Amino acid sequence: MIWRPTHHRRLMQAADAFTTACSFIAAFLFWDRFHSLTGIGLPISVTADDIPIVIGFSFLWVVIFNRLGAYSYQRFVSLWKELTNVVKTTIIGICIFFAAHYFLRFGHIPRTYILAFSFVNLLFLALEKTALFYVAKELRKRGINRKRVLIVGNGDKTHEFIEVVKKNIGWGLDVVGIVKAAAENLTCDTSGVKILGTYEDIEPLLHDNIIDEIIVCIPFDQFGLIGKVIECCEREGVQIRIYSDFFGRLVKKVRVDQPYGMNIISLMAAQDDELKMYIKRLLDIGVSGVMLIVLSPLFLIMSLLIKATSKGPLLYQWNVVGLNKKPFKSWKFRTMVLNADQMKTELLDRNEMAGPVFKIKNDPRVTKIGKVMRRFSLDELPQLCSVFKGDMSLVGPRPAGPHELARYDSWHRRKLSVKPGITCLWQVQGRNKINDFDEWVRLDLEYIENWSLGLDLKILLSTALAVLKGTGS
Image (cartoon, rainbow, N blue to C red; front, side, top):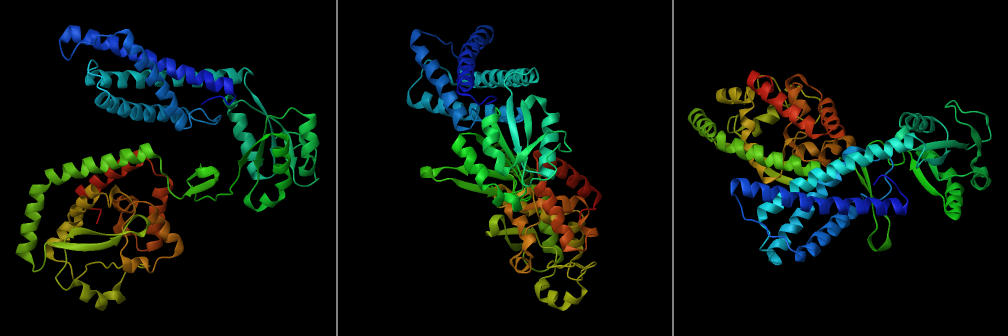
């Protein structure tokens, strides 16, 4: 939602309902024309009895938007967020439409028409949100629907917020002044905004000035100083918003739930955008499923070579921990001799890796065919089963063994906040060149910090090139 006042919310809800109703009509016209030209599908007969269906589902779309928070105050919302809500609403609404079609027997409405409606509705709502987004932005630039805000705080956070506001005129915020903690240099702030007083002056300032909102911009260690400010604003009925490092740099998302009237704040250490994570999971299932089928002849060849060149099982069972330290079993093609684990204790003094991971060059435990498989990362392929199952992802931090986890430092464990993967930044940046486990983990955390679907695709492409060149081992 672009505006906060109630009448603006009602206008937005009316616009969404109207757009959805128009989508029904447009989809009908499209489907009727398509059927008459191709003869594909069933004809649709529209009667007055269908009006309640159109009205009901148009209202349902508004309810879904509301549940997704599309009508709450989001002056800082991006167009991407608006369009994401459109996609989520359309998917949820269409699922309900199909369920209603099945249970309520809308026999005169072809299921193919519902699919046509879904595409039309998605397009219409996206165009509506885009148009309103830029209209609201332009109106604010012209001085309409702007808010007068008072900044509480001093230091880098205050300057940073003011500079961002100046660059984003479309937010519609007019900074009235700044209120600082101490009565020092109460003249003009370096940001060019007038300093109106101290925290003690907040009540008379609210009485003498038109203030729509208070923006608190302070670091965590100063939160104890603004208790009276918050209390005063609450008493005066003035909206407060907080821009602070209160939740720390490592928190990627904050969510507030209110079960049974209780305010519960959830802090997520990793990004958890439901739509993006859903797409990531679909990508994992699709790619791993296809690769398991396409590479099955290679699996057979590798199996025969392993059995023909060394004694022991075909696969090495890998007991590791995944998301939130949950243990699971994965598998690799065996690349070492049968008693490799016993030999490891004799080779510990040759470990070239600083930290809990064991790694040596020209490991005597590796078989001849194992060296080839490791060079081209072919031994990793059975892990596609774990990806398909859901224990792992195609892209993610390196899985940890229980013996490694016991030696992790506290900051290492943050990598367990996401699913482990077959490949990640440590793979494409040359894991054979990394001899410090801390550096390995830093690459994993860099991935977590900057995760996106685009980054996953980039890593997958880089991994494929590294495997073909034989540089990923």
